[in-house]
Length: 582
Image (tube, rainbow, N blue to C red; front, side, top):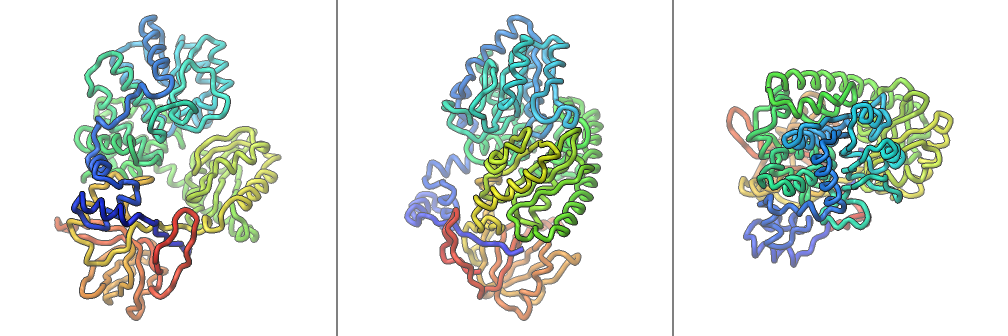
């Protein structure tokens, strides 16, 4: 699949000013300026995050109301139910708040809706459970902002709601006693990109201050907050960066028994980085909700005994094995459906449906399909009397707005810029598919249908030193809006020692002038011919450290490769290119 290479513009004067104050490599300063870090103070805050950088929780709209209602519940000996979604963000949120409340108050329970029996978010079954068990206050986490009718239903039963959410609100808000959501209008909270667990953490911080607990009390849960930030793909900027930074520190130094068990089961023995939370913790926790019941994920996170935690982790591990099998077979079936559709090549979107597909993995399958066919994608399956599914977008395209434009064909929908869920009647499937295709075709810029690689800087092999790598390393944790820096190496040639490994990958040994470096390019064997006859190529790569037999060496991880003579035209979507040749 052809990819477009893009180099963002930068202000050279700001780069030189920053270099003068930081006294570091100019390329590092260029990357920082491109990311909005253009002064000494901003750089200090970026490289040395402090917990004192976190904003006061009282700046969040309705925080005073939420804390007052919880304090009233304490005074009246009311039962409090902590209610959360079935994904990583939801289960970690519930685990954090449940443990915190339980440490100071005895009458607390938790509830996670069953994905298939109840669906996403607040459910009538959940409210009925609260009513039958005499809970008079429900605190919802990572859900609830759209549950207007159900929260009214709870209110009619004399059950109050505090909603802690980060999803985009509709114009009509639910009748809760307090709504904590930095994205709601008239909320002056300075940082808008918290995940659900981040919002829950703010409530814990406010309660902790109100109860005059030690300042460190909320920080007990930072390992779980970091897992939520990593899994929910929120920007790793501002407060999220601080929370992820110290959360990872806790994961490595003193994780809760549940995280420790999951890492142990995965054979993780080296330092844990944020990508380990994304690829080791998140799939196993999400698998519980996808394949069975997510309650056991909360039980794992609140468990203190490591032996019991290992047993629960094993259950999640088994769920994940089942998830992988379902994911693999459904992806193959979906790709076959696409191949059968002769018109698909002319379409700007992908919508596929089979009634027997497992509801729990359709979102993952949508992401897999985008790897092969780079278009906004919806994967649907049968659920009871309706069709339901998940949607995933390509970079830069607002999927939520596209689905909203087709809402007349839907029973329900919700989500973000890049991912969404939806439900519709079977008789509306064809009409919805056509409407979605038309909306995408009319609104998407053609360039957004070509995968983009954003290049941070053009460097030479001589720039790749241990000192350079060490500074890049200090930019962690990486994630959205602070991705691992990507570099372009121009006009490098094969030394003659590059080779295909395992039929799929390339082990690179390339040179530039008199310097050489090794590297790996996963799933790039089909491009090996470009290295033939030592023709010059341009590479896009990241810089990694490879450890072998106790010895560490720098290497490159190649993402893409093009003949050095091939020019690519400028594009003006999000970035303007600056003298990039590929």
